[in-house]
Length: 308
Image 1 (cartoon, rainbow, N blue to C red):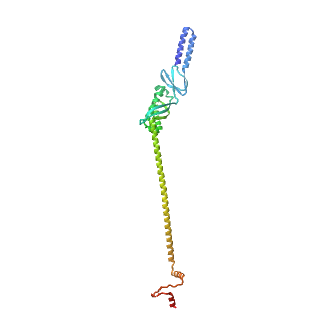
Image 2: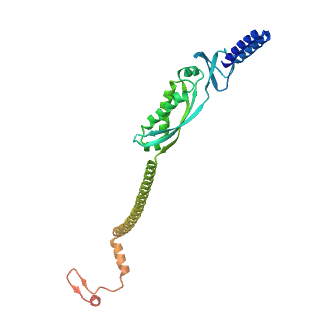
Image 3: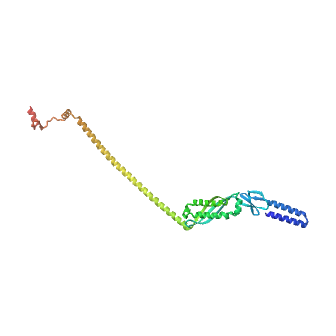
């Protein structure tokens, strides 16, 4: 537009100068310069990673220009919209569910759509980050943070990041702005809360250590008791085994003797008894013999002599 205005000024100035000086070459020179300026004004360049939004006297045209050189009417303007992935980080003071203050450093990577660049420009403008992105980041982070206690924020950082991104992505969709990625870079609590968390963690670690030691002692005591029980059972089993063996030995011996006596008794006959008696007799007669008639022989020698 500036070159077009300059061309008009040069042309008008050349015509006036030609009339005043009555030299026609001045007017021709002015016309040539005017054409040159207009030619330069019609050539527009869109750098890589940008989209050109064309406006005509403030009205947004329904087409855009890709990166490269373009011929555009001199009276039209080309507004450059950056459609590359852009990164912004903000530090936001927030409050947790239990009213603990925390400063959250939140980073967002975003990108606008080429096809919707003219819509974003016509509805929001070039400064769309400050107009729609930054306020929605702040609102999304604060809303999500208020759903967690300060202690939960420490242990559920990933859950918070997912929730913030979900809220923010829904809000940005209304403006055709795509979220490429988001992250919580840092959470900074007050010193009082940080010290309290550290003290609680130390207490929990000490409690866990005490529980572990107590459980270990119980395990060792149970193991010792089990060993003693096994030893006692082994000794009792040994005693029972010895007693059973002794009883079995006595029973076997008694059974053997009884069986031997039974066999001896069954084998006894009168001839065998007489034979055994004869083998055992030493040749002496008994001194006292009781007869059927009731007579008593006191001296065996006398009996022999009486028989003679």
